[in-house]
Length: 87
Image 1 (cartoon, rainbow, N blue to C red):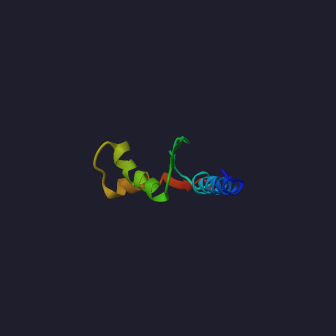
Image 2: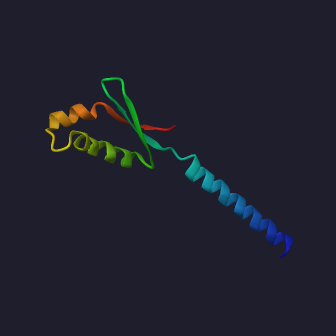
Image 3: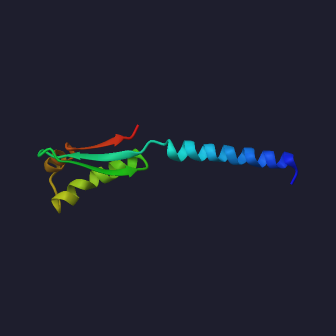
């Protein structure tokens, strides 16, 4: 292999490594934080996007209560949950 091609290949690999680092390592993650009245804190995650974190958060009241809830009770449970970014 000619030295010029080897240098171009090495530069491309370096650029690819930097892009992978920027897009996957430095990307913000989201955590679902649940704070219960008895001062218990639960952290779930990491989630890839805020949308996925909010989807889990919206389904959590039915999971914890074990069935159908009225909107008032559902709102009371959701007050203790928040999606927080890692950055």
